[in-house]
Image (cartoon, rainbow over all chains, first blue to last red; front, side, top):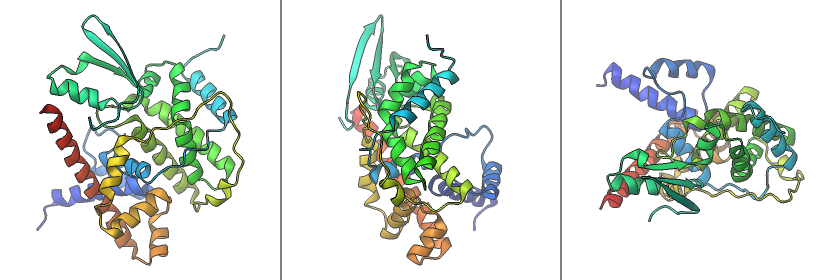
Amino acid sequence: MTTPWERSQKRLTDLLSDLAVFGLNAEEAVELRGLLPDGWDDGFDLLDQTAAGCCLAMGIDVTAPLPYALRERISADAKRMMGYEPR
Amino acid sequence: MPWALRSLTGKVSRDRLAVEWETDFRPLLTFARALGLPRDTVLCQTILQRVAAGDTSAVDDCLAQYGALVWSLARRHSATYADAEDAVQEAFLGIWQGAAKFDPEKGSETTFITMIVRRRLIDRHRKRGRQVETASLESQPVALQENHTERVAISEEATLVRKRMASLRPAERQVLELAISEGMSHSEIAESTSMPLGTVKTHARRGLIRLREMLEADSVTRLTEAKT
């Protein structure tokens, strides 16, 4: 027989797994927020890290470089965001 | 040493060793901890820590180091070339905003960046409700770069994950592969494998949790080995 606390922990783990693998719909995201303990960093869970590790482990073709123009645009935007002013 | 050491430059200033390590300096932190040194004895700066500190040169380093990785992930999850370009811009914005949260003791920079990018791509995919179509992108011409090198070091962590994935049950591995590598939703997986939707979710959850447990056990073993 499981206690309500055990059930909520199980549900929390299920939602964190779903988030890491498939993402959540709006309803599930609200439910997750309600189950997360206070002060929980909205950053990344260990399960997210595992899913990212899986993604890398399955192999990623990195032979195509980021297109140069796009890269320059991203760089300029980032530096502007960081308050950098080119001379 | 279980972790590959790629590039290490260091200088001693007073009693502190300042080290810049390209992606993964956990072996050094583990070594320092095994020696009983306080954490701040070793001052390490990754690209993301430099971004978080406002070092604008780190932006270009990050693009050089991880641009191809992010581009590859974005193309895999985008229907068109323009969509992939937008996705990459969103992903890098997420990287700049999340840089301060990176903790090198918890994982490699490559894995952290992959986490951010995946989360952004999944959210984007859900919002648009699109099917993942990569075939059309594979034939798109890619602008060649000059004087820029693209280099992505697939982390040692990924090698360990690959090894551990082999220990999963076939159905768990299949669901994780379809979801993570192919970007399929649970309903798409259910349709293509003829598994009930609930079973797909259960396999994904169990597989991921079992993998996490195996990796945590590996991590404890590595720490114990470093201490002895």
